Image (tube, rainbow, N blue to C red; front, side, top):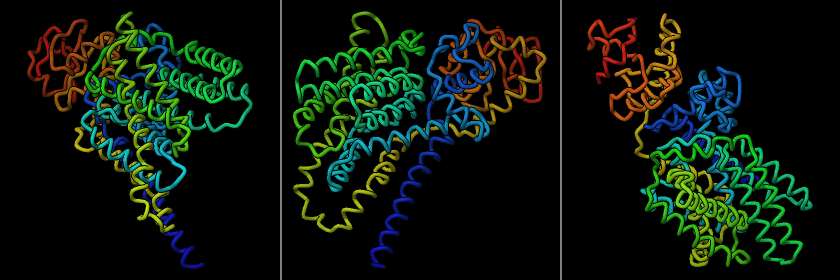
Length: 487
C-alpha cells in the first residue's frame, strides 16, 4: 500500500502545482499589466473611483460619468475591495479581472466534463486545438480583457457559467427551483445586465428541453411561467436604466463582422448537433451547454434584429456575444467528437494511472495553454507605469491652486507615457465633462472642443510660450487649451 499512497501524494502535489501555476500565470499577466490600448480600463477605473468618492450608487446626474449612473456595480465593488489590500483601485481592477478569468476557465473545464475521464481529457484537448486554430478570430473567452477590457462582462460570464452549473444540478421541487433561479438572475444583473438576461434565457431553454422530453400541458405551462418570471427578474432591474444608451455606443472590438457571422452560424450548427445527440452524448453537462448556447445565440440574434430593424443597440453590442458564443460552440463540438477519438485510440488508455492523470491533471494544463494562446504576443502597459503616472498627476492636482478650476475642464497629456495611460489616469483625476477631448488625444488628434486647460509634463510645457502657461510646478504645468496640444 505504501507505493500507492506515495504515488497518490505525488499526483496530488503535481495537481496543486499545476493549478497554482495557472493562477500565478494569470495574475502575473493580468494583475500587473494592462493589455488594452483603448478607453475601457480608464472608464472602469473611474467608475469604481467615483463610487468611492461619492459614496453612492447610482451615480448622480451631476457626475461626469452620469451616462453610466446605473451601470452594474458589483464587479467594481469587488475591484474596490481587492484594491484596498493591493494599494490602489487601479490595481484592484486589474487583479479582479484576473480573478474573473480564472473562474471562467475553471467553469469551462467543468462544462467539458464527460462520464469518462479519457473523454474529458480528449474534450479539453480538442478544445485547445479548436481554440488554437481559430486564435486569429480573437473571440475565445479571455480576449475581451486583452483588446477591449470588458471588465464587467468578464465578471458576468464567470458568474453566469457557475450559476448555470449550480442551478441545473439542484434537485428541488419546481417552485423552489424557479425561485432560486429568479433570485440568481436578479443577483447576476448586479454584475452585468446582459449576463442576467442570459441566465434567464438559459433556464427557460432548460425547462423547454425537459418539456420536449415529457410533453404535456403542465410542462408547457412551466416553460411559460419560467420565461415570464425570469424575464421579469432580469429586465425589471435597476441596472437596466440607461442600458439601451450604453448598448448604442459603437466602439472597436476584436471580433470583426465576418468572424461574428461565422461564430453565429457555427453556434447554431453545434446546438443542432448536440440537440439530436443529447440523449446519447457522454457530456455530463450536456443540457447546461445546450441551454446556454441556445440562449446566447437567441439573444445575439434578437440584438441584431433590434439594431437592424429598430436601430436599437449597435454592431458592438451584437459582437460582444461572440466571446461566449464562440467558446461554447467549440466546446460542444469538442465534446461530441471526443467519443469517436477515444474509440480510435482507446487501447492506449487501459492503465488506471493514466485515467487518473488524464482526469485530474488535464484541466489545469489546458487552462494554462488556453491562457497562453490568448495572451501570447500581446502589447501591454505595465501597472508600475500606470501607478507612477497616477501618483504624480494625482499629487499635483491635489496641491494645485487651480484644482477647482481644473476639475471638469482639463485633459492630461504627459509625453513620458502612452496616450492610453494618459486617458486611463486623466479622466479619473480630472473628471472631464467632455471625455471625448481626452479620447481625442488617445486617437492622436489635437482638436479640443470643451476643454479649458491641459495638464502637461514639464518637458512638454517648455514647448509653449509663457503666455500659454497658467501655473507651473516641478512635475507638471497647467496650459491653456487654446494654445493647442504639442505632441
